[in-house]
Amino acid sequence: MEKPDELFKKLKSFSEPELQKEILKHGKFIKANKGDILVREGQYLNFLPIVIEGLLRVYQENDDREILLYYVGPEQTCMMSLSAAYFDYYSTANGIAIEPTEILVLPAHLIAEWQLKYPSWNRFIIKTFKSRYDELLAAFGNVAFKPIHVRVKEYLFAYQKNNRSSKVSISHQNLANELGTTRVVISRILKQFEKENLIKLHRGYIELKT
Amino acid sequence: MEKPDELFKKLKSFSEPELQKEILKHGKFIKANKGDILVREGQYLNFLPIVIEGLLRVYQENDDREILLYYVGPEQTCMMSLSAAYFDYYSTANGIAIEPTEILVLPAHLIAEWQLKYPSWNRFIIKTFKSRYDELLAAFGNVAFKPIHVRVKEYLFAYQKNNRSSKVSISHQNLANELGTTRVVISRILKQFEKENLIKLHRGYIELKT
DNA sequence: AAATGTGTGTATCAAAAGATACATTTGAGA
DNA sequence: TCTCAAATGTATCTTTTGATACACACATTT
Image (cartoon, rainbow over all chains, first blue to last red):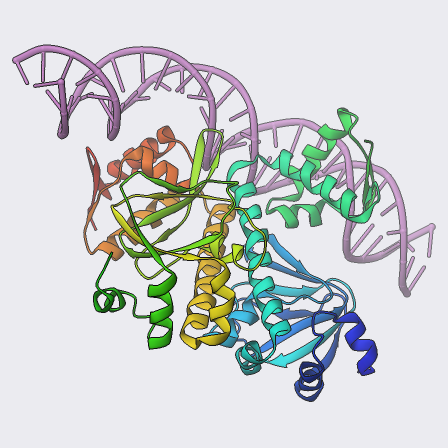
């Protein structure tokens, strides 16, 4: 549980005092540990989780493979729950905390209500819909058209850009899970990149050489 | 141009009289011929097209291949334009009329305005966001996890279900475009299905035998 | 130091998918 | 009827991806 002023320093999207009061009145705060699974495919949802601090990973599963859909960082929420506010709905993806994560949980029925009352809330909703859609569309285009080695390369460079670091801290297995393939395939491709002198492989991380 | 009462018989989502007046005041009606390209990737959008009659196909392109994102049928609109109403935005997909299509075109800036004024409009917007997202998510899962022959089979059966007909009227090339692959691959798979006595091939259509 | 789990390297084989090329068939329109 | 473009059939070859199996390295805990 947080001090209100602390909280809304982190959740800048919700600037209206009235909205802030409502959030404090109806919201619950929970903490998830690294590895906690918060949402499972098929599960009915009647709440909206907004991340305050930390990081959730939302992904799809199929037999023994999985693929990343998107991350939910601070001040963000997920699509599945958002849809649940307007329609009877169950999740079509899984959500797991990959860092210790602090979450504000709101009852789903309030989403539609607030949308008409608070412009900043409405912007938040629409922005979430839009940006999640864009992300998914980009991922879809990649999977449909690009061979894996290209997607690996793009992943590494995107990571470098986001973290301003040439050390990409991820295991081959986890990288495979991000891209929807298997560990052996990733190891093979990375080894090839190393031969081309693009990267250097280490245990637990990959060093980019450009 | 339509008679108002005719129009809103087709667009049942917009039940409020006030909203109907606004639509008639600000909307323009255009007709697209089969094959007309309405939106191109990269194009800036400042209008929202709502299909009254006919069918649009929204797809992504990459070099020589393309893949279906979704169709826009009567009473529906597309994501790209919807996003444009709230944020500066350009299309990340192409839209083409695959039937003679009648379209109601609304200025983008009205979308957000109406959303707060007219509940039925807001429902329409949210529903569009949600259902387009769901479709894309399903397609993404398919592309990521299912081999093409399975996707072909599912496509054929879905077509059968939607059209209540065992004649799937589509060329191999077009089927390839729906699924993001090439004609040869499709022909090969279909021929295999024919050997397994699942279908019978004809010029211009495929007959399902189950 | 031994035990354990995770991470990595790599070989082999099979299957899926794509690229290319060319022949043949069919239907629509001149 | 003739012509042409679109649609289809199919062979060959290559590349990509996946499946399986096993060895070894490294880090942490006991």
